Length: 417
Length: 183
Image 1 (cartoon, rainbow over the protein chains, first blue to last red):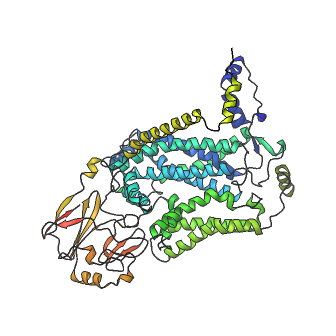
Image 2: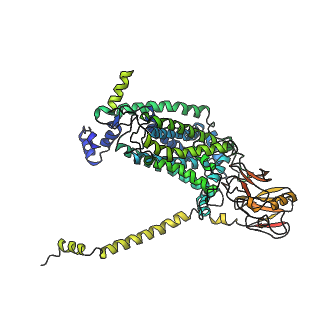
Image 3: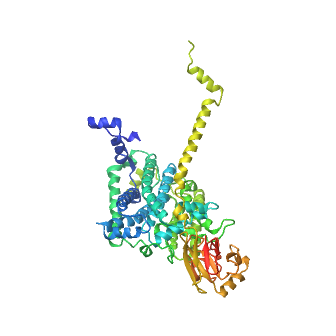
């Protein structure tokens, strides 16, 4: 990317540094001068919003770890201690808890943006896969974080999810005991989850660095999905997109702040304000909202498939749902990236979004009719979309004519208005 | 003096596809890999259940106070365990079920001890994902797991829902008519 460099060291000191460690040059190339398509819309601000979310979680998390005690006898009280006694602890704890939800709001929007505009297509497959890896790591981190307050949902959520390991044939129970450090969720589990919950965000940060590296090789996709042809198609990242991203962040902080200050517990579950009790299961276990679509898929498989029993089947289905995301660059072979120019794709994409929201809704419902049947239908559509609809559409669809360049499409829109 | 130079060495390498140096590379790599695995093993193994957890592996429990039709939940190895004093009706129902109706076929006799058929002792975690089923409910006069909707009958056998297996019967024995040792 050095061809974009316009950095000329101004002073002898800058020159001296540039010859030894060109950090200033690197920052100027990648954070300021980086040529960015000039037609990016607000859906593109969520990348920067996610970086902010990760930062908020790390800062508030480090502070919480100064007061939190990872021990089954003390954990629940220590969280209440943070909320009631620590100066400003109420807001810091709420920011961390609400922040997890806001992180996933931005994460899902960012992913659905990529799915609509074909941001996973060549040459951005690695960029997309790293994004899915970040999603999986964030899910694991959020899950382990939810165990730490040691409420009823913490405990039973951990029990249900760790039982997923026991579905593995032959070695399942040994792996489960290895993960939990006992025969059931207990103090060793809480301790190790705390340790890993502290570690994973830094691993996520490292994968984010790779994600941005992989972004800066081909450069950004854009709403029309047509490659950048010349410098007229782009503007420098700074100030155009630093300002747009900052504005996006400000808008994003409004609902974030509303939750933190006015409804810090609304996204949680009342059962989690009862201390963990291994003898009583809450009548209705619900994971956090952001895990619900995958939870629905897990429990939708309540029947044996050939020699695979229902439990292993559910685990395979849930893993498969995530694996579909990893291989989507090779399932959707349409040469047209952007959904804007794909008349049939748009409808199915719309259905997919509605279906995903339906999966989320169903995950929070009881395991009874009509929800169990609906869960099967929605699970089937989820897989149908990736495994059948996308590959078939790529073959039969006639896309609308593409603009010849980003520049032309931007000016064309202006002429119409 | 004859120079023992680069030409000689490269000719030798071209002639034999594997030589002593290749063997040394592979041997060094193999020893290194074994060494790394030996270091990783204790780092993983420390995650396994510790001695204090394993020490709680066996308990004794007095079942005398449990009335017919009553059920208690006790703790064994950190797991909840049902001790159920079944009614004659429940035992009859359990024995009447044809094996063909069962997802995980097991007779009522196989799940109880001879002469103590009224006592049903099972680990109280649903075999699906580990929730504690609710007693005396569900469609089969046994247990119902509210988490994902598994129904168990009066012998704790899975009848409907996503759970793959019957509720697990732990190893136990009757030390006397009223004293049970689990584990």
